Image: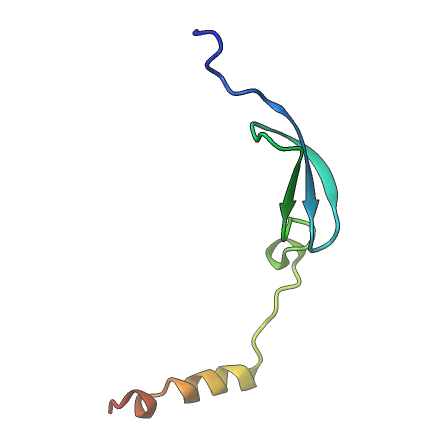
Length: 73
């Protein structure tokens, strides 16, 4: 294996602006902190708090994109 060609691995602090969670990771980034918007603690796909469309929202979508609107049949 060649010497001095591998990136330096260091500890980086990750800060989530969505839920203010802070944790450390190992990374090859050349910075002390990494700011992210969402993480697994606050993202709806991980928390199970997905927003389900109501029947009214679906009807509104169908009405907006109906064939009359598009000039079709």
